[in-house]
Length: 75
Image (cartoon, rainbow, N blue to C red; front, top):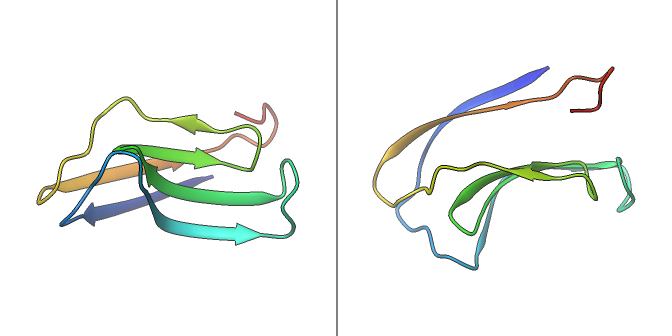
């Protein structure tokens, strides 16, 4: 599956988390979906198996983000 969105952030500070979407069944590995901007990068995870984007996000710009997940490979 894929989550796609356009975001526009007026402030993006290094060392800060900006929540886009969170859905937690419980705070345990593979049970807590979170889509965020962390340290100026797009960040995706299920708690304990997270990945981050390479693009540094800057304030006052539009970005198209696409977070994808393959259930069979868990990537």
